[in-house]
Amino acid sequence: MGRYPGDYRGTTTTGRCPVRTASTRSPPGRHEEVVVIFDNREEAGRQLGQRLAHLRGRDVVVAGLPRGGIPVAFEVARALEAPLDVILVRKLGVPFQPELAMGAIAEGGVRVVNEEARRLANVGPEEFAAVQARELVELDRRTRRFRNGRPRIPLAGRTVVVVDDGIATGSTASAACQVVRAQGATHVVLATPVAPRDRIGWLRRQADEVVCVQTPDAFFGIGEFYADFSQTPDEEVVDLLRRAALTMPVGGAVADPSGGDVEVDIPVGRVRLAGRITVPDPSRGVVVFAHGSGSSRHSPRNQFVARDLSAAGLATLLFDLLTPDEERDRANVFDIRLLARRLIDVTGWLRGQPVTATLPIGYFGASTGAAAALRAAAEGGFPVAAVVSRGGRPDLAAAQLTAVRAPTLLIVGARDDLVLELNRQAQARLLGCENRLAIVPGATHLFAEPGALEQAAALARDWFVDHLALAGHPGRA
Image (cartoon, rainbow, N blue to C red; front, side, top):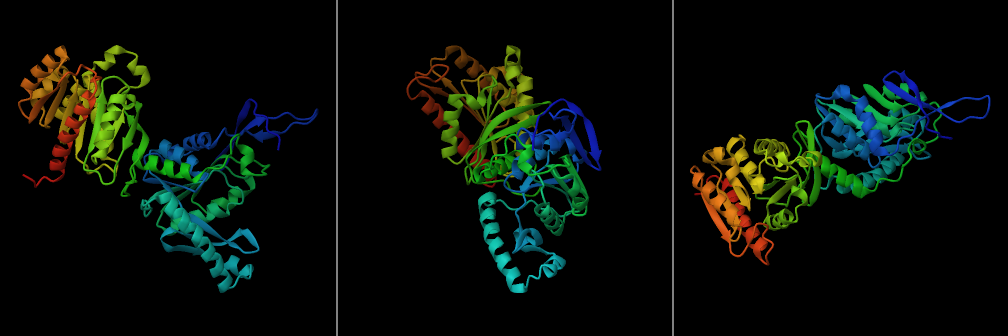
């Protein structure tokens, strides 16, 4: 099919499925229109998320069909601020016509049988059982591969958005809709970037609502509507599900506890802050890194300390307190109120993630981030088990220091004369908490001397291990 994306000529609507069209090149005397293609699945997901905006704020779970449906579903879940899960369903196709579904199976022993289709195809019990056994093998493989130990997100009583990267015949999508309804969904939405116009009426019988971005008349295959329709590897599916588990609300489900570095995108007010979270299994606490500039997650010194903490069984979150645009304004680096507010909001985000919800929290601050950490510990409303400042400026939180209750360790280089004096003055104001000033011999402000950063990391590790372990076991003396 020829595709020449031109100027948009408007939007038409079929039911709930808007269709965006564009002019195409045609022989003289002839004019036709085709649907504009998507660049890739991510762009298709963003467009689909916009069409589903009416669901934002409802009790929604987004369920993506693997593999190609997961990148689309990830963007939809982000747009709706909803949890993302994978829907593992296998169609039971008629042996001599696999596209014709006579039923479906899914996780948890769910089985849906279309008895009429089975009888019309003259498929007996033994033949049906053979088809089911074959599909169970693939279902089990995908369950182990994609879930990696994560349980399903409960669907009972919720709106479930079933997402695929496109619908051709609709048999798999129909099976998925039947399965989520069997799992207790009260409202089923089938959402896809593209589906044939002549299938929309039939699809509406399978779901309470059908939402499409494109519904072309001419339809030769889903890949025709994507500039990039390369295969989605298993590894990408696993990574997107892990990222979603850490960055999106998941209701009563438990997020991925398997560890590893995961890039996160944390919504804070009107901005989103980039970060990297590492969660060892098991974890005895989580340490949030705060750096005054916007480069906390890229700081080699912070990364060095984080690796030491991770090896000791502590989860770590390195994130940028400022966006790149904000960092260009030097005044923001010294806006301790702004930095502390960001840290408090990110702490609230951590408390909403199942993988870190119950872990004791510590703050590791450097530069002006140390002042933000102490102010956040004093004002945040969340219990903070320990604070460590490395070469920090706690004096910039002077008005809040007397209200700090978290045990605080101030680490300063012996040759960092000005900062050392400022830390001594700040320590004198820490009247409401256990505190200690640790001086690293021979170290300057950046702890660049041989062995200096290793000493600072060891001091921080021991402080966090001792105090976060105590917070995790409040009965200990």
